[in-house]
Image 1 (cartoon, helix red, strand yellow):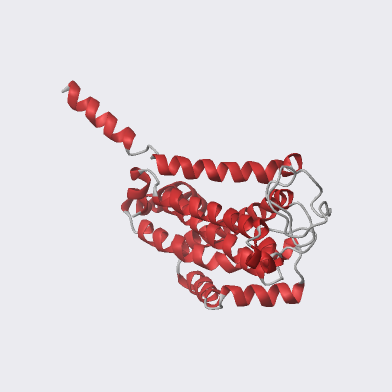
Image 2: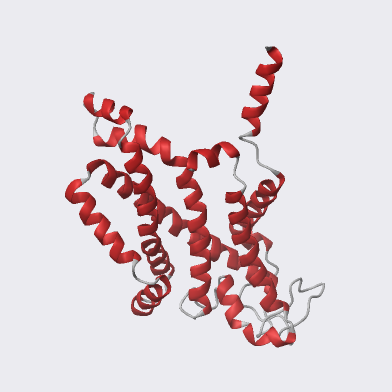
Length: 283
């Protein structure tokens, strides 16, 4: 009996443990987050300062990631670029998921005309190609950081809404929701205490995926020239402005591309390797 209990406890613990892949990916994500926070303390040179007479310079003791098309230090620009890529993407995904999840739960609980109006509005937004929508808004309103955050948040709110609503509709039919209504509980209590805890695991997984989508869309907009503007640059802008050095095998093109890849792949692999218990709740 004791042995059976010990096995049961060990099995429950293992369902919450991160495997080695997840731990490694989590470490990469934390590393890039710390770089984004402490970038001004890490950089060797000011982000816009020309420090080398050679363009597309090689890796050296003074320039750990070479220099760009103007002779600026790529290590400093990539470290500072992490602030824009990670910062803008994180703020945008927080806004998008918060709005989408709250509206999705409200639509599921209230139903009726509110559900119909909000769902049709979200369907209209999600039908517009994301890159085209971003290009039109940013080209018309300018490419300030506030406009970029707003645009990215609007683009990915409908997807988060539909995801949260689908789960909330199923939860809303459960007996304990009926009991809560019979007790006279208010809408806020039902959403906060009954529905949200039961959809939190899949919502967090969706949060990670949407963060990846926003990073890639932001990089794409910057690659097209309507993202973060010079002398500042996110990783997508660094790839675009140094693309002519690709034929030379310049580190100025390869390192920002690797930065985008390591962040997005790490988030994807972390989601794929979430503890078994969390995956079970999200299915």
